[in-house]
Length: 307
Image 1 (tube, rainbow, N blue to C red):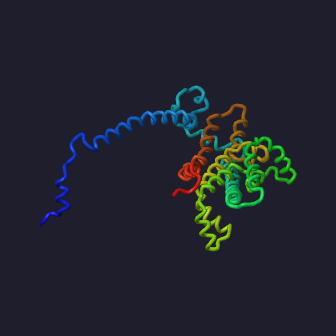
Image 2 (image 1 turned 90 degrees about the horizontal axis):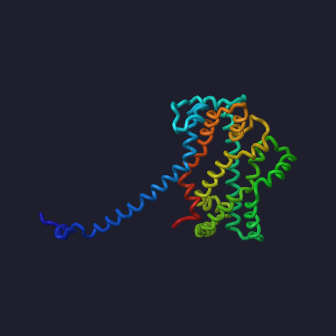
Image 3 (image 1 turned 135 degrees about the vertical axis):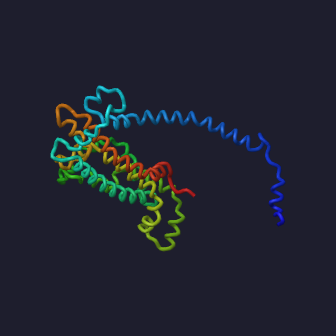
């Protein structure tokens, strides 16, 4: 058989000698790796410092009430799940299953109305030209500077007059009017980074404004919408002042109020039980964050679509 001319030519190519050509690249790569490990070490140290309270919380949930204050170590002498069982059964007639359900009854509807209202308002500010648009947008941004405590009393008086006290309506309905201005601002900035080429093409095909929003804008806004969902979920689950002001019936309490109630229910606080339920209360927020981590980071760091 005759050898291919390509193979014959390739066999005659000189082989690189040691120390020539690729050696310099390997040296640069090794030097770059040598400069990286101090950064990784520093970042790991900062991460440990930031995560230590959470790790201590998890470790303390397996300790007894006396061991929490007497033991300086992180890990308990023996792992005991009794604090979780006792903490789940509160001193009231309801378990924490009821309070978790109440939290979801507040959080899920609030997320739905927040996404719908904020997307509509952001779409109007970013894509439509109307009289007073810049002034209204400036006023909306200015409301972000108001301390929330300033609005508590007027809102309470309004909700008392319309008979909404001791219900979930004061905690959900305001979000249906895009009162979470931070989300509107974030979505507007994201929309401004989205080119209008696809929208103009869809308009030529006969799409109206709502069809453009649903078929073009919303899919492109997916990372930003997921960021809104994650933020609102965590903030609503952790909200303490709102339920404290508007809710009076124990059977309607969310987890945040139930935890405070469990602390003050007895003269001697069973801290092991409180810490155990605090760990359980963190699970939904942590799970939602990690489930949406990829889109959440993309939505929080970018401001549009990439080529």
